[in-house]
Structure formats: C-alpha cells, structure tokens
Length: 268
Image 1 (tube, rainbow, N blue to C red):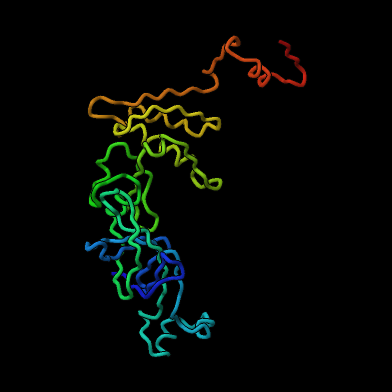
Image 2: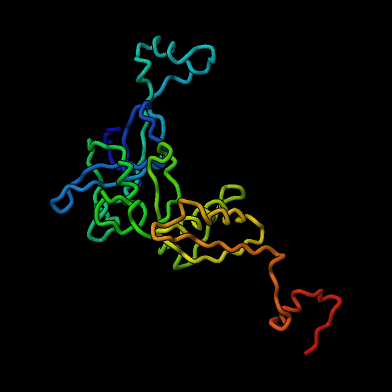
C-alpha cells in the first residue's frame, strides 16, 4: 500500500491522497484501488497527475546551506526520516471490463480512507494497450500480431513491457510526432522490425530519402526473426544507383519535375 484516499479532487474524475516522501510516487505513475461495482469488487486504475509538498522543514531553516536537514529536524524535535508529506492528485482511468475488453467508468470516486496500491506490472501490460484480452492475467507475449514498443518509464527497466496491436495502427494512418532528436526514426524502425517478426509477417515498403533505415537489411538471417516453420524475412535494399526508370514510363508532369523548367520548354 502506498497511501490512502484523502478526498475528491477539483475535477469530477480526480481524487487526492497523501503519502510520505519515501514512497517516491512520481507523476505519471499508475495506481489501483478496489471498489464494489454492481455487486462485484473491481480493481480501478488511476494515474497520478500532480504532486505537491504539504509538510516539510521550515524555509527559514533551509535557507542556510551549512545546516543539514537532519540538524533542523532534530532542533524541531521531529523524526528526520518522516519529515515530508506530499499530496498527490490522481485521475481515474476506470476498471477493465472483460466482457467489453476495454476500460469502463465506475461512475464513482473512491471513499476517503480507501487504500491505494501500485498497479501490478502484468496487469498494466494487459489493460493499457487495446489488445482485446478477456482477462487481466493474459500473457500478452503469447498473443499474435502485437508489437513490443518498449516499457513504462516510471518503472524499473523492462518491468512493464508494452505491446500494441499491429492491426490497429497498420490498417489506418499513423503519425509519430515529437521534437527533433527525440527518437521518431528509432520508434518507426522498432515498429518495422516488430512487424517483420514471425508472429506478424508483414509486407512493408519503406521510402527512406534520408538514409535512416539502411540497417534494416541486418534483419535478414537474424535468428530472432526466423520462424520454426522456416520463415525468414527477405529484405531488398535499393540505393539510388540501383534505381532505373524508363523515359517512356514518365508522364509530362514527371519530366517537368526532373528538368530545369527555367531553361527548358516542353510542348505537347
């Protein structure tokens, strides 16, 4: 248990709880609590959205950098290991409805005093992506057609692995948006690699004008991409020297785009 509910928050789907500093609950962390819904106890998921200090050492004492916090705590007669308290705000996500295979709103906030816990890793792996699982105990690594894209930052490395359904993002438009240098190309290459694994076996055509995906040719022959039935993805890489286009296959607009239109006139 990491804390107890103190009361409702400012928004209808928010509640607040208090925790000591040694719990190290970060903004973005997923937590869970139990409430009765239609006569059945449900594990409701929520996400921490804000964290603020509500009790700490006096600012006047902390203004002197030569005086350590332990000395201040001893002077005030309070335990040095339980000095700070934080008020955290969490937003309700809902409980996972196994019949609808998606989240459902419990339509109620937890009562004050309701104990809160860190959401288990294996449950988050099941319920966060839209995988259509019929139970929160599903081993998502055994599901066909899913792509492993990484793990949650707020947990230990590789503790909560996230898989997304390939059909969901490959059957429609997908945009990867982020600032320069944040890893857009790397994310795209991860998705491409996952789609070429034996569990997915996708056919892909990649246009790479900046030469960022040349290493995808290393997939061919790699053991982790080979299936038990002999599947081995074939990667064909075309650089500019290998590309040839017949003039007879070009339209007038293609010719005008290739030639310098400022010095060449094209008539029909």
